[in-house]
Image (cartoon, rainbow over all chains, first blue to last red):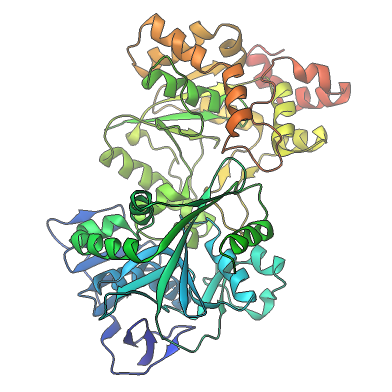
Length: 295
Length: 279
């Protein structure tokens, strides 16, 4: 078995992860190979390739594996014939881990988090909004990266919404890596058929920090725009960037999600950073966001 | 349910114009719809759409893997979504590696295929791509293996689209047997919009009055689209293009292409051009 930390828990896994935080406590989550059902029976929320019910969710990735995530404590995997381990891990470390975090009562947003002087700043937005690219740019100026795809937030004993480190790695496309001076020949693709790479951040600490600012990256059809968001809009922003809303419905986690969202809205400042995705350069957008965050 | 309608065309043949007309028709008001907020039609190759349905990050799949999913996703959407769904596509009517049609008969109500004189497509497409070299577009329009969004080294928002050559794109949709396809010339939409758009409404089984169709045409006029783009830009405009709604005129190909370029396009596509009255 392989042992490693993620957020506030430790995982024991039959399958190795290419990057992870070292284990520091007794494992609470197990990842094992098992034969799985193709369906969870009656009821629940069904999608084209998932079935969510209270406390359990089944995901099927064609040609790779079926994953059953149960009770926030078990991940069972049944690979398809000829599936390679890198592909199994790629979906395990993204979508499957996201489900586990939801089941463990994290508020999960689509995005990354970095730590600047003990404060968490989240970059959220839809897929392919440029979150990882921007997170990498902030890392280059000294920010400590907590995650780039799953923003995991949990209330601590004093009621503060804390952002937790998820994985010590960035997922970057080859083109972005080369633009940033990276050497792809020294990296392994996330999957054999994909030119996207897992770049270790070498972060060591697993201490959470209060999430104080949330920036939504938006594709827009006009000029660069920075907007401070009021409470009403913040609700829309959090709901709109909630990780896999349909999973929450199926797993009966909507009420918990609402309470978590409310706590976050009371604690954090929210902004929208808009750009024309195909016009604004990554560099210009980074400087724009950095200037507005006064970093 | 057979509830999907494909709005198909080679690029720069009036597809966006048709989508905006339908938006104005379905959400009929005196005011033109917002071209940056079209609610009645969807991009058939949107990865956001596929992510939403699958529940996992589809961009972790290769283009071939996404291709294999597409027919089944469309069939699933057909079975789950309410009402008729309008999907834009530039893909040729083609098949996955295992021989399944990307646009499954069992999910499809109908298709509308827009065709435009390839001489004019060439000019418009060159501006759209930010090319000053028409020969490059002429070569692309003749490329039987041409694809959109086929990059593999950077984030992609849409699945790979096999558009093939201009002629093959048209021929592929002419070969459809499993559902009705209305072929509509851009030039007829331009010269006689009421008749052309009435044919669209009739083909779709949409019961709208003459007044409603005329109002939707007015709200979708090229001048209106240009006005909105100049005020608020247009989110589907590619980075290298100065304007999405640039000219829209017919006959620009003959005016702007050299004799040898015109001859080249006719040599590549003459048969289909003649079939649709362009020669």
